[in-house]
Every structure is written in structure tokens, then in C-alpha cells.
View 1 (cartoon, rainbow, N blue to C red):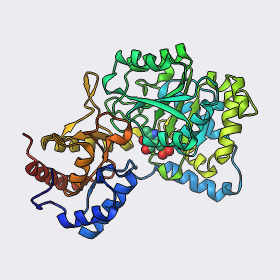
View 2: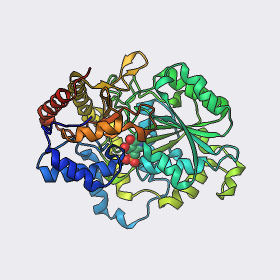
View 3: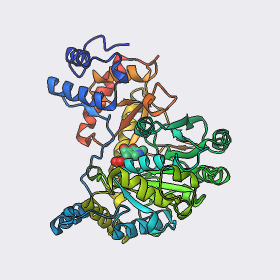
View 4: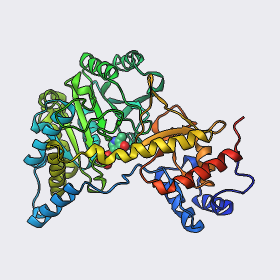
Length: 443
Ligand SMILES: Cc1ncc(COP(=O)(O)O)c(C=O)c1O
């Protein structure tokens, strides 16, 4: 299919030229950064703004309390001093309190370690866990997922396996996970909750299945909470008061939580996240670690082996920022969930515009409940595969990425991120979707 009649919201020839200049075989299979560059080029050549849904970047100002604390720390001169590798004590204490207040779990401050973004937390976890037990050399991803985690495996030369969870929700997850765990080579499992890209959220039944199997097979669960508290169907914003953000940590003590500051606190630029290691895992020992580390204790190997080697800790001033953000959240003075609710509200409106114009939501349910409105949603259009749909939508001034790069089996699907789309663009979005629908009647 093609925008053949040329009557497209963005000049047909300009889009053609810019796609040609990109010089890739299928535009819809380009990387996120390539799509970004292409859209930048089309925007500047056409003078028209796109509905930009390709990048998962925060679209809100950073948490002010963090910026203030960071400026103050810099003025005090912390930039001159190496911070402790495992984090400044005041931050470690606030992280431990934060997980108590918002997840209702107890973790010693020793296992609460700031990392250079949650991205580095993942890297460090994969690196250390893959050396912990010589029989266990493979990570399992519950997909769809964040492609960079797999890239981390490739650059480290580590093994991974994965499956799309779409058909394995609820009790069906048990047998599927067990089929991997029973092989004996899986050291850890990673999933994000809420999920990037599909925004599915595991419920407690599913988290219990994951936790129970982690106990039974001695597998570590890496729970990626990049979108902490952002399932807006429930209010997880009150410290020390239920409901709490659901977590596998209620069902196993074999876990690492990766908590990002990027989206929940709009603090992506300072590259600071939290790695929270359960007390049991932190203190556990394995002589196999001695192949690469001087300590056989997991926590020590992680801190003085991996984190030290990677970056000798995390920027000093950003640690003060995060400590101040968490302190304000812990004391109920900063409602971080309220701050980011705007994403969910925009998603609700945008999803309706898409659905009203012939699109369908790909990951549309959490078992029996409609999917929540949040940072991302997934779409498809009858008759298109994902990469072709991306290419075609460019003529309509809409950009997104293909689900194929996320490990999803739904190759017809796209991921749409709401963060950069302004409410003032909704009339444009509606007009462009109507045109698309008109040009591509669903039979
Ligand atoms: C699922 C997921 N995990 C991890 C990250 C990385 O977070 P950070 O910016 O803290 O490195 C992201 C960022 O988009 C993400 O979507």
C-alpha cells in the first residue's frame, strides 16, 4: 500500500526524498535513532511538525527538589570528591525507605546502590549474575522488552533467551517459565512492569508464579521498574499506605529491582537510577564468583568488582538530587505519581483517536482488564505489517517504532510513546489519522 494519491498531510515528495537519503532498505526497520534523524530532516524540509511518538524520553520538567539539591551540592564542592562506590549513605538510607514506603518491602541500605541510570544497573546485574554459577549462563527475557538490554548482552558476549508473554498471561505463565528454568541454564529473568513497550502490568497472581519459580529453581528475578507507580488505574502514590506498586519481592527474596529516575522523576539527563538487591542475594556466596572477583559474596562482587570497574560509582551531585527527591516522596511532600499522570491522560485521548480511525490496540488487555493508559501503547492497522505502517505513517506526519525490535511476535504492531506529543497537537493528530483512514479504507 502507498500514499498513492499524494494528497498527504506532509509533502509526498519531501518524504520520499528524505527516505531515499536515509539509504536503508526498509525505512520501518531503521533503528529508533535513525527514525528520529529522518523525522528531524522531514520536519525541517517541510516546515511541518510531526506527532513524534518514536522516542521514550520524558516530556515533563525534572523534579524541582532534585535540581535544587543538586545545585546546592555542587556549590558545596562535591564535584571535587569521589563518592562512595556503593552510594552516599544519605541516599542509600532514602532508597531503603522508599522501597519500604512504596513497595512495602524491607531491604538493608547496603543493598541499595545508585547506578548511572537504570541502564547501568542492568549491565552490572547481567555481568555479575552471569558469573555466579558456572552452570547458569543465560538470561531469560519476558518480552516484549527494552531492546538495549539485549544489546548489553551482545556487547558483553552473554547468552539470552526470550519469549513473548502475550499468549502466556495468568496461570499459563507457570508452565512457560518452567520450560526454561528446567533446563538449568537460566541465572536470571528480566521483565519490566509496567512493560515497555506494551504497557501490560503483571498482577499479583503472575508475580507470585514468577517468585515461586524463582525460589524453586534458584533463579534471580530482575524486576525493571522503569515506570514505577505509573499504572494509574491504582493510586500507588501514598508513602506507607496500600495499595503498593506490585512487586515480585513479595514472593521471593531472590531479586534485584532496577528503579529508574528517568520517567517517574523526569530525571533522565542526570543518569541516575537505583539497583536494589535483596538482603538474601546480597549476602549469598558462590565460589564460582572467584573466577572473576576477589570476593565470593554477591554484594561485594557487585560493588567492588562490577560497579567499581564500570564507573567507580555514580555522579556525586546527582546522588544528592535523588536523595532529596526520595526524601520528599518518603515524607509525602512530593507526589511523584501525580506529576506524571499527564502521560496516562494523554494516552487515553490518543488511543481513542487511533481506534476511532481504524487502528487497533495490539496488547489490549491485562488478562481480563483493559490495558492501562500510560507512557506507551501499541497499535496496528489492518492490512499492514509494522515496518510498512511506519513508512506509510511518515507521509501523515506521525512517527513511531516497530514492535519487531522489542522481541514481540506481533510484527504488525508499533509502539507509540505519548510523552513528546503536546495536547495542542491533538487536532493535528486527529486530522492526520482521518486522512490516513480515508486513504486506507478497512475492508
Ligand atoms: C524498560 C526500561 N528499562 C530501563 C530503562 C533505562 O532507564 P534509565 O534512563 O534509568 O537508564 C528504560 C528507559 O527508557 C526503560 O524503558
